[in-house]
Length: 454
Image (tube, rainbow, N blue to C red; front, side):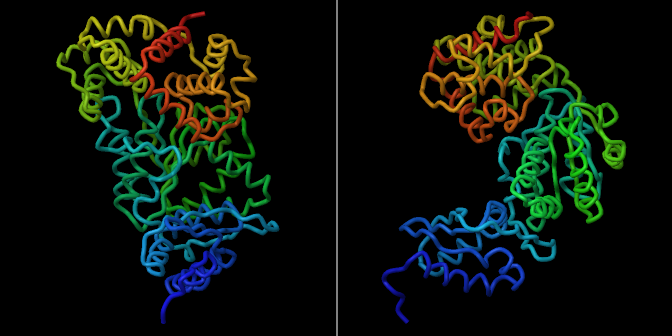
């Protein structure tokens, strides 16, 4: 039978839905697609309307590839599949069980917000300060829930905890396509919980977090002083553990040093393996810079440049790599050769010898506001004029580079913005630093002021 010339979004969805019914069991189809509808169709895209954000996220994580294949089968061409939430009367969020959900596709666990594609085991530099933590993380990635469960990694700012956490998530997503993976920061977990309470979808939240095969939660020290969040995480932890799922957590201190942490939660954190990451020694810091130079394709003819930079920054890998980026950018902007003398000129004010001042997002905001003659309300408010957006992006960039704050936390401190806004801001300023001398000078100046002892 010839297919109708005019294919509508509704008729296409009817065809696709028939194929999904044949591929999925009845319960799974009814749970996720009973209220779906085709809403838009163009030459290159098909938009599927769903009743709520929870359903949208679950379908995107589990069935997007299947829908895309069905669309291609029906239309004979590739179309991008997108999902949108359609306004309708509130309904209870679906409550899937582990038995009813389709396995997550290979690699989909690494698409979580805030994941850095460079945070892999291959790009992690091993030294005496982190060797055991790396070995434990790799063991968990290779055999989830069989080696160390839970795994608790702790250490100071910028030492590689997040790198190891995301390396585990991306390794499992790539090598174990039958396992569902979720990496979140503690802020994301808390925000999801608060939003579910507000929207009266707490059961959906519980099912969402308690059916993963591997859950990784970064910076659990932020659960401090939050009794209701601790209560929910306690039950999430128990459900996952009893189901044989792997749990990985990180913190800036060991469980026993997290004040106000409930004893029953602290004891569970200590059930498995606790390992720390120490500041890297000089040899490891040089190796980290060599790895970055190789990965980013940077030509450094004088190896003493890397040794000099490594000798100046000793406690924070993020600052270490940032220092290299600035030296390389200055060389590119001025045409001066990469040398120890150049590195010394660039870093003398930004990374001074001796004890640095404590850096906070608030201090960065104050200095940027002062520099651009803005009020704090303007910097963190809703206005989007260029004379405000640019300083805001600079402040976000500095907050990401000079503090240990996660992307969601930075967004929250800038008027409750989404973490994707922070990603965009930091990427834009990092690019401008390499291309525009005035931006480079501005960031140098502000960084030096932020680090000055008051």
